[in-house]
Amino acid sequence: MVELGGVVVTVKVAHFRLCYSRMQFCVAYLRESLEMVLDAHVRAFEFFGGSCRKGIYDNLKTVVTKILMGKDRQFNRRFQNLASHYLFEPVACTPAAGWEKGQVESQVKFIRQRLFVPRPKFAGMDELNHWLKDRCQTIAAGHLHPEFKDQTVADYFAQEKKHLVAVSSPFDGYKETPARVATTALVSYDRNRYSVNASAVGRTVMLRAYAGRIVIVHEGEVIGDHRRQFVRDKAVYDAWHYLEVLEHKPGALRNGAPFRGWQLPEPLMEIRQTLSKRSDGDRQFVGIPGAVALYGLDALASGVASRDVVLNILSRAHDDPEISECETSAACRNLKCRPLPTAAVTMSS
Image (cartoon, rainbow, N blue to C red):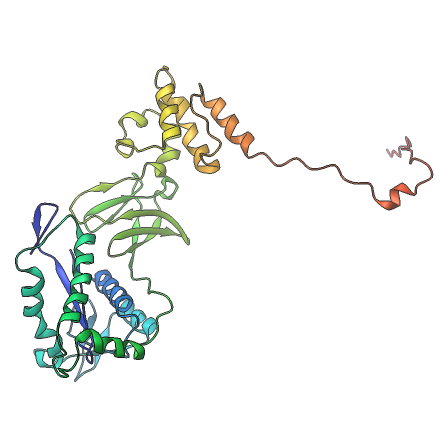
């Protein structure tokens, strides 16, 4: 139990521990789903500075899809991709045999007492995880190795770190599911809705759920990227996704849900305030954001009086550069007389 932004919530803590040095790493999440497990591995191997050659796991439902005879398990495909990326072998414990991973099981009470008693308070999850990372390093530097009492856990971790498998690039830890884009240009996931480009309405897209982001992809192109929400029944809009709709329904600029509280860049905000004084100000303004998305804000001047002036400024700033006059070749300079055009015309009936 922790307090985040003044609200008491229950967090899920992923706990890793290296078997030789006993170096540990903790990271907290609001869910215990597959994308969280994948993200926890990415963070852990980044913290350790490399991956292990073998990982001992409990029979997590998010990782183990089927328990077979003995030690055989059928792992989730995305988890297998993670293991192949980091070149480690996952080994599952026998059900109800906690001693097979005792180095972690025995540390649950220790971590809870050391890190979560009394109840910690933070502004958000990012601040909590930075604190957990620092605390893991502090504990390792201040505790002797439980088996070799001559040095601390941090000292033995420095020796073990040299033998870890080097990581060249982090694993892209997401869970991908197909989703249908509604007529409101929204896709649903985990009881929340996220906007995409209006051109994708009615199509089936691929939704990639990360630990902290939602990315929507269609035909290899990202059409939506949002910070993930962990509340329920919330719609997350990006007003720039609705520019096509705005051109046909300019009245939505004032009353449409995607445009409420739209934080425009300062030059665009000044233009909108100027045009709002006119009766057709909304209709004039709706054509400007699309041009800005194409050309950028660098050439945009504030204080302009109409849409046509703004579009003219943006287009002129990106006109094709003038072509310099061609130099006359040496062969042309050697001509003795000027070539004359002929007026002969051949016609046939």
